[in-house]
Image 1 (cartoon, helix red, strand yellow):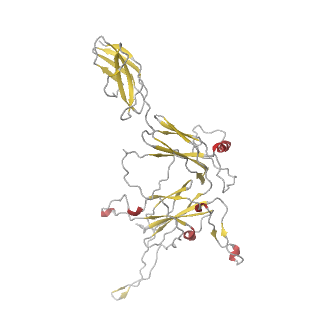
Image 2 (spheres, one colour):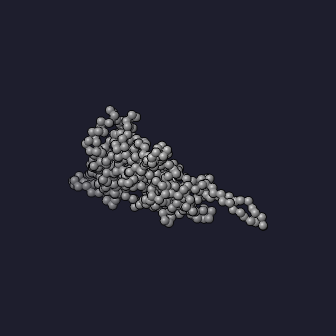
Image 3 (cartoon, one colour):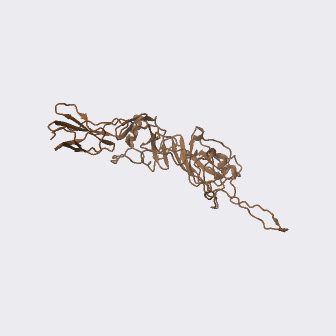
Length: 447
């Protein structure tokens, strides 16, 4: 999504109810003053903000009600606005000091009583009230510069000097708020702003490597910051790590001052991200994705990793890309850096299943019965029985297609002939399955 930026101020907040004195005349008599209601949409009270390098993902729910709790909301569009500083500006000056990140058009929800279905695709990128939207703010150089709020100081109030910009000490932050607007252009109330710290972020690993087997992909990567970063993190590590090796990033010491130009306290953790090619056989989504759904990525791991490796289930014949980001700090001062160069590949199932074991032959009148130990493999596709004679070491396939059970009765035998048997397992790879090595060979004479 391309974010549109504008420094035009937001229109002043409208009152909840506007009273207009109207004199109505009915049957020659003056009626009472009528106070028509002007409905104002409710505020966006909660925004979830997540910073990944120079990208900030903002998620919130479009208001479904007006400020007086009535429905449907008198909502024509929403503006998402941002401000950079060490403290948020007063709400009365948000429109003056903030910049426009995105404008989201809102459509009235269809009336079920009128037989209108819920439309999946709306013209012009509109969304419905109650929809969850995600807006992407890509930070540029100007977004990382503080914009102090000019407040009247004591000297200015007493006429001894002009007002000076006020920039409270502390780490730089990026503040966000969403403002609803009515079809007549009247703004609703500001909700509580949300902020993300603009502290420096750790660099990504320089190298990411991947290998895979029939069951899993194994990723390894170099430390963030190279050898020096590894040594600094090793000094910050606790004496013993839990056996799992997966822990949240350590919190900074309570007495450690936070420098605006320094990373939060370490050690460094890592988040791994996976982007998978769409399965062509998967059903299409019931709802077409909205234009206002930037899709913040979700890491494979549930919490930042201390280790420099991760094991992920393999998905064969589908292109997959992995990237790794470094993480530092703890809430509310957590920073996550840019992604490493993605490593992309298509896992190919070239791994044959295990061979069957314990093959046994039991002769009967006019037949030879074979039984063996089945393999334990979720990708098992069945078994092929091989047969030859004692005079010929080359075995031929006896069963034209794989059989599911770990047993077989050979009735195409000639009495007095000594036969040699073996069994191989096949997997479910298409169009040509992988074939295991032979089981142990057995010999038996037909009766």
